[in-house]
Image 1 (cartoon, helix red, strand yellow):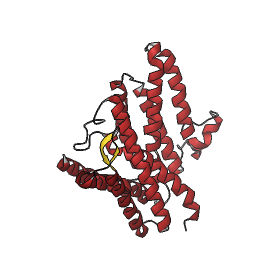
Image 2 (spheres, helix red, strand yellow):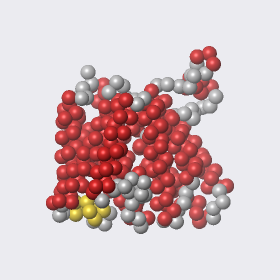
Image 3 (cartoon, one colour):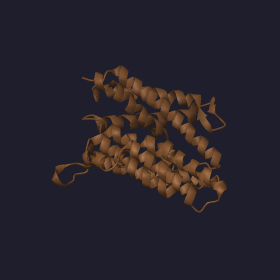
Image 4 (cartoon, one colour):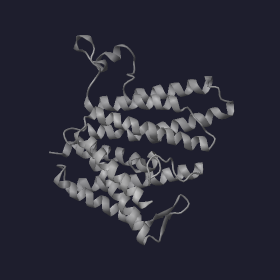
Length: 292
């Protein structure tokens, strides 16, 4: 199991790093769209295992709209129209609320969910669970992950910020895994994840702080803010990890999928990023006025 885990990391980490550092925000958005769709498939599989199949196609379609909206917000772009005007500028004359905005994506999703609850060929007993699993998939998977696109587009240091958010999670996960396996004794949450220990949790936190301090040579922010982003991102990531464990426990499965050898599914690999990405983004947004 360990060699498969290491081999998967050796293949994926350089590829993701290259995409983040040298790919355009549009290409990064496409990558996030792919991972979000795969994660949604696994999430709906958990719901199906629990007897709640939901509306995966509609949720996936709205997730794509959300990703596109986040890309527009991250890059400040619109769709070019004849005469040089952008869709963003022209849209208020077409509709009261722009479809290609985060708010518009949520309204579109909600409207479609209401319609599907009425017209879909499901029994009345299935309507509420199907809407619930679909809404939770959109809110708990697609929406927070889409903030990776906003991070990448956050100015000239955006790619470094996104990689920073990922590395604090990678380092934390690696430290937790090896320390927990070697010296872990005190169980963190045995009802959710029996293998997680307090020793591994502390090691994860320390590893993220090390990354945060080292990043002072790479991101022009005071070490205090980098350590705060690393610590808050790590805590958010560990909460996201435990939340995904709760979902799997509820569905009665060990892994969300089998796409990544040694790691399980996509959700198993990115669960910590689900909360870490928006936390780092909002902290950076808060301090961005202080950055010289």
